[in-house]
Length: 266
Image 1 (cartoon, rainbow, N blue to C red):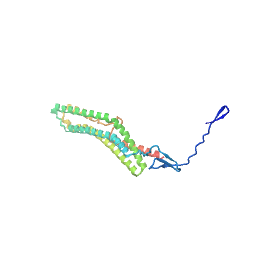
Image 2 (cartoon, rainbow, N blue to C red):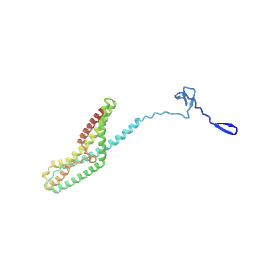
Image 3 (cartoon, rainbow, N blue to C red):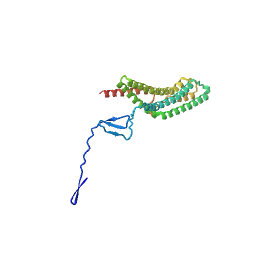
Image 4 (spheres, rainbow, N blue to C red):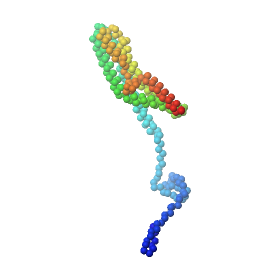
């Protein structure tokens, strides 16, 4: 501000600030051996601190490895536990069926025959309680794995067709085969459990039941009626895990794949 005095008055005349001259220098980068920015002009600007450029790649192999391990442990681990417990139950059902088929009743030993059937029923009920607990533990996990497997199979089939015969397409084909094989193993153990639990009724029919007493025959009929309702592993009552389920899943996968392919093609 400038003060100009005219006799007794003082008038302030504001000074107009002139804008700085434009700088026509072009910033071209930094010298790795110094801490300065250089331009086409002779002006140099000192940096306050070093700038370290780090490239961050989101697709690190370590992260992919941990993510893959987590998915495999969650999906495959529950299926392995279910198959191990189911194999134990199948073993007990097979043992009871062989024991019942090899028993030889007699009319003279009515009391001993009835005691044999009583102990047999107790063991059978204990195995059925164990099967019920397995259904309660793995039912929800099997239901989630069922829908996840169906989605994965559909997507992998579509990606395989889209990618074609290259490295990525072959990896999708391998993933499709592994997921399908995993669910086939689960379905085969479910089918084995159904067959072996039903084999008790066949063992009761194939034994020499006609040599037993009337009371023995009546008790044996009750065992046959109960064994004709096979033990099944179900996904929370939604669907029974068996080989028929595997066929249904593969057919549903193919239908969804055909629909998605036609939609994308249009």
